[in-house]
Length: 409
Ligand SMILES: C[C@H](CCC[C@@H](C)[C@H]1CC[C@H]2[C@@H]3[C@H](O)C[C@@H]4C[C@H](O)CC[C@]4(C)[C@H]3C[C@H](O)[C@]12C)C(=O)SCCNC(=O)CCNC(=O)[C@H](O)C(C)(C)COP(=O)(O)OP(=O)(O)OC[C@H]1O[C@@H](n2cnc3c(N)ncnc32)[C@H](O)[C@@H]1OP(=O)(O)O
Image 1: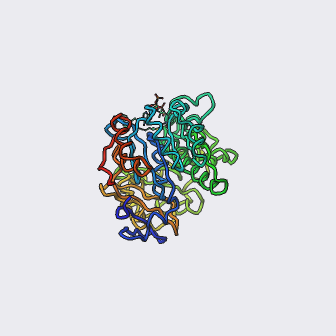
Image 2: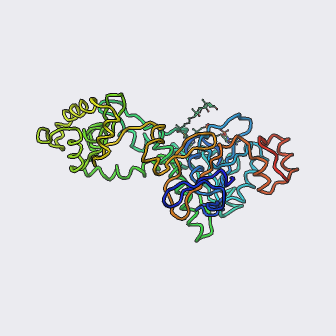
Image 3: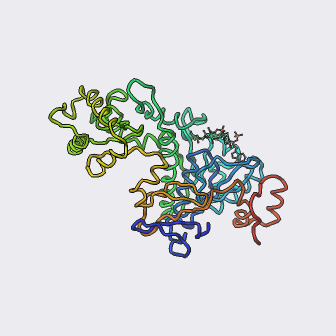
């Protein structure tokens, strides 16, 4: 990664473009860590991108004979195109793993073992390797070998049943909870924990990251708050799932929406003030039987003004009321601009900057476009000690594909 294509943030969150060594990859938390990420759909790529954002050198292993990748989270990674089904291809991966710290594999249980690339095969030759297995159902249990996607994982975690409005079918919050919160992010945390532990033991280990469990773990609050009667009513009738009038979205006169999160009495009072209502003429906040009526009142009032006007009103009132923004609007929202919360890469694509911010060793983000499949095959293999002759032989045998500029010898 060229430092000219990176951006970092200093401790007061002011972005500083890098044309010098002020934020070299040496200053990043994961600098020196080498990661091999076998290309997957969505969770594995997020995991790899997070690690790359914080300084790890991530090589994505793509298949051969594919034109494009579905990885839209390739930031900061390099790509090699390698056919793992050919024994020579599996040997190449073994050699890469001998010299790496982490392997991320996103396939269903048993796929890696069939290729003779299971943990036994790889840890035997590099006992320091952290072998991260990111699956839906984990490495054992009756569903371990089944295919699945986010919606399946959160359904089995007990979570999907909670999402949706009263009287309607459950509705998945896109694929955020299973794939990303419970999957990519949890796996990244597992890898960082294992890297930390390795500093004491000198040993690698296998990470069994199940998205059912990861999503369930993220939702510990939901499980543990059952006793508080916060989420014990049917879907869509609870405080935080669109049952309450003061934790809801409302349509404005211009077809946009406002988000209301006025849970505590002091913020609820400010909400009532901001809406121009008189609390003495309304039922009490926590009168559950009056919630439908309160919702009707709030709905009518919010529909009387545009989103911009409501923003002006609530910008100066501590009522926990904010506009519902599209992704594009979010990147332009003044508070987010104050913090430089979104970055624009050299292709003009806008995306969130890494979080959280570390004061001394901030993330340095690559602004280069995402890698093309096999763009770095030659450069990576040479870096890992393959000779030009070996690379040529692998190419002739169609084990690898070279889709990038020739490496300079
Ligand atoms: C909801 C999300 C998923 C969102 C992704 C969607 C946005 C995209 C999904 C499909 C995309 C479309 C599609 O690709 C067609 C077009 C392509 C075009 O380029 C773009 C437009 C497309 C329309 C494209 C558009 C979008 O990108 C999509 C709609 C999720 O939930 S993601 C989470 C998924 N679940 C998991 O990760 C859990 C663990 N994994 C699994 O359960 C399975 O891997 C999975 C994901 C269900 C896939 O099952 P599958 O049977 O296909 O694979 P596996 O059993 O794991 O085996 C992998 C086999 O591949 C071989 N292999 C791997 N690497 C290599 C290599 N380098 N060389 C050779 N061979 C390789 C491996 O050996 C396995 O072979 P076998 O089957 O023979 O053992």
